[in-house]
Image (cartoon, rainbow, N blue to C red):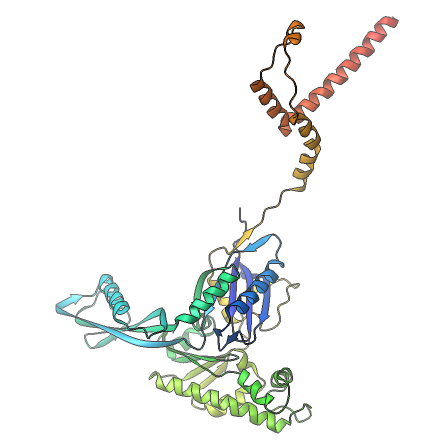
Length: 457
């Protein structure tokens, strides 16, 4: 029987695949295991390119997680989806009535089903989530139309779609690793739940995740997701730009991380500081211009931008952001306090547990692991104690015949003999038998001693 409710979370990113095992406690999430596997060309821009390589990486990740907790076997996991092909499309459904009709939940459900049937999903895509927006009735906008009489209602929806092939390859990779997907979540939605305050969700905020290969822009107003899109640019583009200066990709990555933008002149490297600043600012300006276009084209009144992701953690990157987005209130979510604990022995570095990974652990409810029950050591010893005698009892003993009858011994039938052997093989009965034999031996010795004493007297 499973004693703990283990939640397994796996985040498939552009630079690595991360996984963690946690349990829910009174004080929050307790992380028991963590591991990550680097990815190369088999995952690009958040899209799985090679199913076999991804499956092997997942298998290695699972094995490393299992070795950190004794006697467990991972059967399923919670995962996120995202990547280059994910974006949103708006749709609306209008219903008119002959007279004023009070809107009911049944009418809302019927309109939602109608949207499901009439929305044309582009070829090669599948719909993964539908976010209802506000309702328009009696010339006014309402978030809660139930109970309002009207002659006409217009319902707006945000349909999030993703390439069919991406989801298929994701599922195949997990099948290869022999791990079931307990549930999948939109990574941007999980981040918004953790990183955005109620004020930011209501006032109008763009949550921007600058990853390795992609930048995801999710726009929120009035606590509703209004738009989501993925830009095919990320911090890895800065690394590639630095490689053009005749340095290795490993050295370029280290220079980008440890020196960053506006590095001190005294910090020596194989690339001049002035050129480094030029490369970083040039690529970041391109990314920021794309972010600004996506915000402005949404038609929403957005006054704030919250940045997250590895690309937002480069040294002094806020200087470039503020210079190029002066009309927005900027916040970089670098020191978010997430409610989790872990043992000191667990090798978790700063930033290893991302908001997405922690969000999966928090949302997970279904146990993902099977605990392997091992037999107690005393049970093994007990079996060994009686093994020899058990084997002796398994040898069929001859049934007494006529000679036994003559001596007053009753005949034991084959069926009775089987019952007797079965009783003797029972450990408890064996103990009783051994104890009884010991008592008999003690009694016989005592009788013999008494008889000898009587003869002497």
